[in-house]
Every structure is written in structure tokens, then in C-alpha cells.
Length: 308
Image (cartoon, rainbow, N blue to C red; front, side):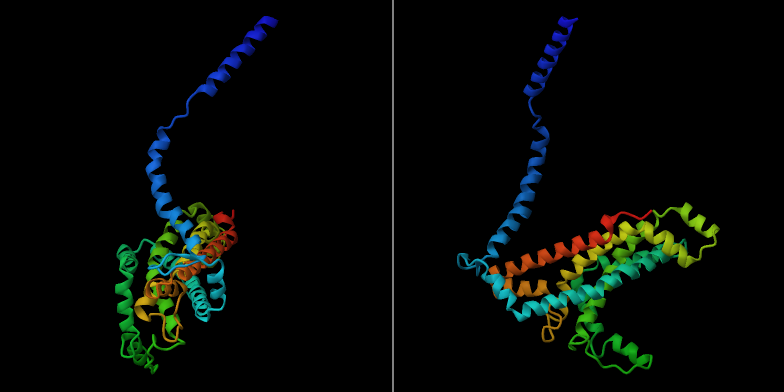
């Protein structure tokens, strides 16, 4: 009996040794290598370079010179930086609530089986796939003092000759409305996908219990759509803080920097003034802001988990 136990132990020892000697299968890593090289070359390496250049004085045509935290010190004293940062948060405060709420009701509208609803979906999604440059130029004409917006206001009895894009009080909200309008179709589809996944049994049970439409929306739809809200908040937040093309085309940051966004200011510093070091430092700050806002949105939505 003792001999049998010794033999079993020896066999186990031999098996462990053989397992250790077994070679690692390198085939999967070989297939992954091209993707790893591409990701490192075009994502991680530029990110590391950006961190380095943010601590240098770099003007493209001259070698980068290490200056430590000087760019960040200059940033704290740069009034235009703070103005552009404040404008970016105003874009965020205007566009995110609109993009989060309005597309939900549009999705509820197109979720019904009504004649011609597919055509409505296509038409409402067209702005999403249309070039922002083309849309911005079109809306620039709409916002002109003799454009259709003022013509419509005059038609309904509201006298208006406002040049919406040359007024410091209306320029930023005007661009925010354009951005919200263009993105609504995209978020409408996201909500539509979420609505079609809502449990029909819960809806029928609520109707049998005599719940009104408002109560069904509040107690059935919204809890089930919590993960969708999480995605919408994160994506709309990133989009609003990174607003660039519409501002660049419609106002160029004016009038009096009232529409200057942080990405546009970074662009001007980098490609007009060729101050790459300072522009990169502002880019790092923008990246940190986006990370913080994304984490806050994620925590508010409890990681995108639906409430049961």
C-alpha cells in the first residue's frame, strides 16, 4: 500500500515537470504582433511624445528645448486659454442636456408602427452623415440678418434683424443649437435600439395595473434605458468639449473670442503660431478634462448598470 502511494507521487512529479517543459504557443502572439505594432506606433507613442513636448519649447523649425512646467505656468496666466475653456464648458452645458433629452422623445416617436415612419428615420438621420463643413456653411446663411431664421421670426410677428453669429450674446448658443441638431439623429438611433430592448412584459403589466403613459415612461422605460443614458452622456460630453469644425467655419472663434473653444485655440497655437509645445500642453489639459468628465458620467450612471 505504501509502495503504491510512492509510485503515484512520482507519477505526479513527472507530470508536473512535463507541464513546465511544455513550450508556450507563440502563434497567437505572432498574429497579434502587427496590430500591437500599429497601436503602439500610432496611439501610445504619439501620446508619450505629447507628454514630452508639453514640457518643451518647440516651434517646429527648431529643436525642442526642455523648459519644465513653463508652458503650464503660462497657461495659468493666459486669459484667452481661460476664455476658451469657459466657452467649451458653455457648449457642454447647452448641448449635452438637449442631446440627452430630445432624442429620447424622437426615438419614442419613431418606435411606433406608423405609415412613413421609415422615411422619417432616414430624413432625420441625414444630417449625421452630412459633412459638418457643408452643414456649417448652410447654417451660416440661415443665421444671416436676411436669412430664413430672421425671416421666419418676422413672419410670426417678432421683429428681428439680429446677426446671430456677430453678436457676442447669441453666437455661442447659435453654434450649440447647430451641433445639437446635427447630432440628434445619431442619438435617436441609440435610444431607438434601447427602446426595442425594453421588456414588453413589463409594459403590458404596467398597462394592466392602470399606469398612465407618463408613469410607464418613468418607471419602466427610464430604468431599462440607464445603460443607454450612460453611453449618450459620455459620447455627448466628449463631442461638446471637442467642438471645433462648426466654430472654425462659422465664426473662427469670434466675435471677441465669444465662441472660441479650447480645441480651436489649440489649433491656432499649433498650426498658425507654430507654438507646438504650448499647444501640446493645452492638449494634455483637454485630455485630463475629458477623462475626468467621462469618469464622473460613468459614476453617475453606476457604470451603465440598469436598475432592476
